[in-house]
Amino acid sequence: MMKKFGIAVTAVLVCGALTACNATKESLGLSKKAPDEFMVSTRAPLSLPPEYNLLPVAEDSYKIEQQEARQAETEDMTGAEKKLLAKMER
Image 1 (cartoon, rainbow, N blue to C red):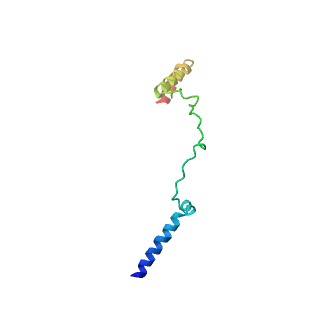
Image 2 (image 1 turned 45 degrees about the horizontal axis):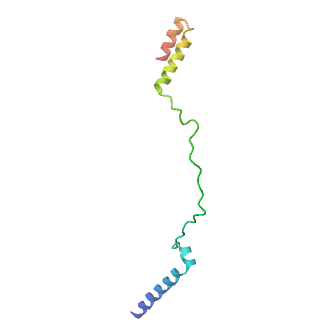
């Protein structure tokens, strides 16, 4: 009984001695480091990319542009060529 009590007291004293030492606290990560206000640097303001205001093209408008381009191409075609092209698109 006395031996267990002696071991417990010794363990408490060793823990107390280790936590009292600053070097031990720092190595165990128990100490808190306050930030240095003079080491704080300011960050540059956020900037937007140059093409930020451009919107993506909707699929419908893209399809309309393609149809207009096809119509411009088919104006120079003969009737047989237009029929053949219509069959190919199906």
